[in-house]
Structure formats: C-alpha cells, structure tokens
Image (cartoon, rainbow, N blue to C red):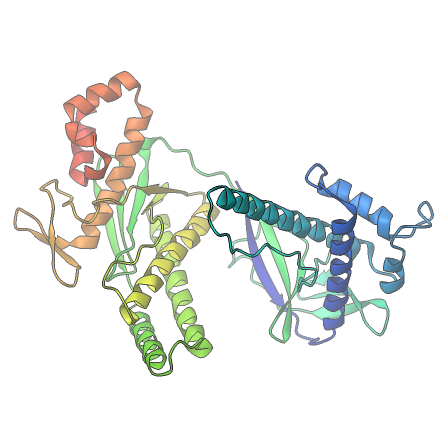
Length: 446
C-alpha cells in the first residue's frame, strides 16, 4: 500500500514575492479551462497525457506548430514555463471532467424527479473558471535544492521568469519518520501571508499478514465520557493491557465555548460566530490529534497487528437533543469520525491494519456473557446481572475485540466446519450478541 506524508517548510527570506507567480498560474489555468470546455466534448476517453498533448497544440506556438488556434495564450503568458503549462493543463482536465460528471448526475436526478411527477428545484452545477490553486515546483525545472534549508525556485518577478534564492525552515526527517521515504516535487502554498514549500514523501508500505491465531489487536471504544478506551486482546480472549484516554481540560473548555455560542445565538438569533467556531475547531483538532497519537502509540507498545473500531455509520441526533446538548452530540460524532480516519492513516504508516465491527449491543451486553447491563446516569459504569459493577466503555472494548476475532475465525473455516461449530457454540450464530465470553468459548471449542 502506497502511503504519503506532507511536510511544510516555511520560506523565511521572502514574503510577497510569490503572489504574482500564483496569480499568473491561476490566470493560465482559467484560460485553459475555457479552451478545454469549448474544444472537447467527451474527454473521458482520453488519458491525461493525451489531453496535455492535444491542448498544447491548440495554445502553444512551436517550430512544428507555428499557428495554434489560441495563439493569444503565448502573448498573454510570455515565457510561461513548460512545466507550469503542463501542470495547468492536467489540473484543468480534472476540473472540467469533474464538472461534467456532476452535471450528468444532476441531469439524471432531474429526469427521475420529472418521471415521478416531483418538483425539481435543485440548481445545475456551473463550470468555475476562476480558481485559487498553488503550482507544483518540479525539481530541476522549477526548483533546485541547494542544501537542507536553502534552494532556488523559478518565479515571475519584474516582468520576467527568473531564479530566486530561498531559505526555508529545515524539517527533522528522522522525527517525522520519513528518512527512507521518497521525496516528491514541492508545492508552493500560502497560509495567510506566509509561503511554504509543501513537500510530499511517499513509501510503499506492506501491511502485516499475521495468522489470526497469532494476532494481537487493540480494541478501541470511542465513548461518551472518555475520548477512547483501549484494550489489547490476543486470539484466546486474554486481555493483556488496558488504557483510558481523555482530555478533561480541553473538553471543559469546549463545553464552555458551546454554551457561550448557544447563549449568543439565543439573544441575537442565528449568527455565524466565526470567532467561537475558530476556537471550537482548534480544541476539537487538539483532542483528535492527541487521542489518535496515543491510540497508535499504545498499539505499537504491544506490537498489535490490527486496531479495531466500531462502524459509526451516519449521524442520527436522538430525540430531545436541542441547543447546546445537540451541538455537543454533533461535535462528539464528528470527533469520533475524525479520530478513526486519523488512526487509520497513522496505523498504515506502521504497517498495522484497521478493522471495523458491528456496533450493536457492544455496550449493552456484559463481556462475561451474563446478559444486558444497567448503566448509571453518567453512563460510565455498568451493573451486570451478577451484581458486578464495571466500567461500561472498558467492557465494550472487550466485546469489540472479541467480535473481530470471532468473525475472523468463522471466515477462516470451511462451510461444513462452520456449521458444526455454530451447532456446538450457538451463541456465535448471531453477530450482535457476541461478547468476550463468546470468544473464549469458541476458542475452547476449536
């Protein structure tokens, strides 16, 4: 599996010299988008490489092509670098293709609505010619690295394309774990008033293929009171370690911000409140990154092969949730989704796999197989039918890991042996009733 990481190197010796380069590149991109839309009908039959060649014949003057149809391109963009031109054509092809695909989907949706006699008010998509895109600085032609923190790039300056020396912030490649990764062409990007060289690093990582019987998994329950509750399980159902991950200070600040936001909206009606949302987003991002990092670090400590999550599905706000309570529920769901996506990316860097299981009843069933539990008002403790009181999210994480192993065991068996096993251990027949006790019973039967 090919993986990529992107590191930003801040350019320290120039501030606004690159504005004109980015502006000219986007003007050329707009020109080419209009050309492709006017000249080509169906572009899906052509590869990007073929489209680059055909569009260049329409806009670029050469010795073998002295009279292109759109000769004003060379007049407007004098000495425009060839690699910029081809990059702009490739980007324009993608944008036109995307627009036409969206338009086709809109047209089909409209036809279905008209056949059913429904009123269709959805506006059709429009081809946007104006964009704010940043150019790729191809090595050797647009960018030369002189040292770890110095280089030169070709930019438009004083009405000409010239090489400019730049100094950029050095990144610790060992700390970022990209020492043996392939460095790709940098991209010139702007963040606020500062410019960066955004460099992607690629590597082909092979994910582990350990047999089910030899696997260890990190089962993660993204709960209500804790950001994550993790447990390490092996294939026999033995719990090797547990860890609770939470950020109480950050969540307290987050809840105060949501209360302030709702109070302001109750007084003034609906308001966009960008300052509130900026702070909320900042706290959310910190919780997501911190939780994801600690989950992967915990899995690495015990050499886990798989990290197992619950499948979240679509967000459904429970009835009776309104105001700040409804907003907190939405933030929690968005946070859980972002944590799963972040952990997936980080785990793949380490060669670990990600799996998701059916979430139904993972928290409602006791891990010891005693049946349904009763949870307190805070939802953090669960009382089993045997009278034992246990942490609800920890019990759920045991069930999550157990469901992964039960599913893997059943998939690895033949149809005949699976039926025999289900007859011997009937509790594994229904997936939504699997618990850690079911895994232990199944392992003993095998």
